[in-house]
Length: 157
Image (tube, rainbow, N blue to C red):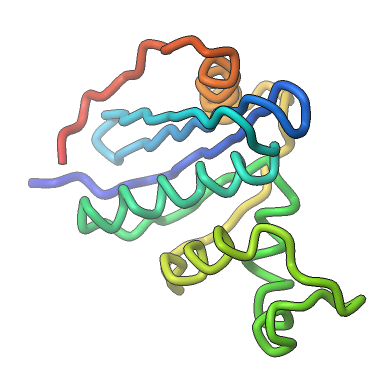
């Protein structure tokens, strides 16, 4: 029997902004197993890495056939973008309220395609002692620094 995903934490990091960046994801399952992921980009921004983490998390859920229950991000940009701003951007032809092109439109479009009603987007304050957030932050920072962190993957697809 497959355990359901209970919660997901995502984070992005960038050394310089723009600069080398990394992202991290920690997926917790109801049976106590954990699946961690991460990646890097040579020249990017913190916001793009935050978005890439959320994309990777949702792609993992889709591939595993499990909709996430709660997706935690410490990025207000990602949380507000996907839950508040996106409908207006789409109505305005991917323009902001000021009439400027939406930054990171390519990633917003991917997130929009992956997002479903079963995704409960939650903001978690970064660097506040939350174990899931701290762990994905460590993964993201390691990748941004060019290091390969040891990833727990007690769960196979």
